[in-house]
Length: 100
Image (cartoon, rainbow, N blue to C red; front, side):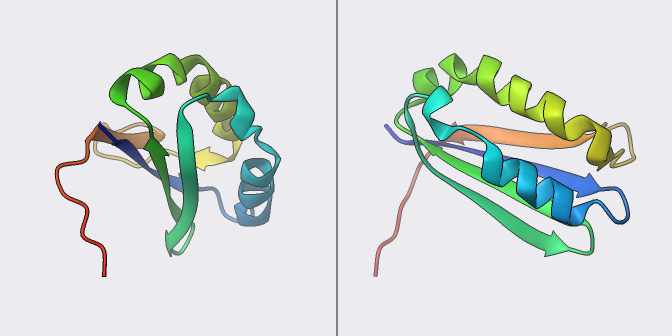
């Protein structure tokens, strides 16, 4: 069953272009089972990364690559506050997919 992960991050002032560039440079092939990935600008310096995966297992197996990518981003990120740290991640199996 398809799985998705969603991660909210806030970028330090003036680092938005670097943040987008680092995402463009990421090697999706290092994450087998990854189908699609989106980077969404959700507000001023606020971004959401959405990943679509073949399964929860594929997503779990890709964690080392995802952490390696996050390590490249960390210097550009600002703490989200409220004890959330630099990222606010969510993931799970898709319960419903509506197509037009």
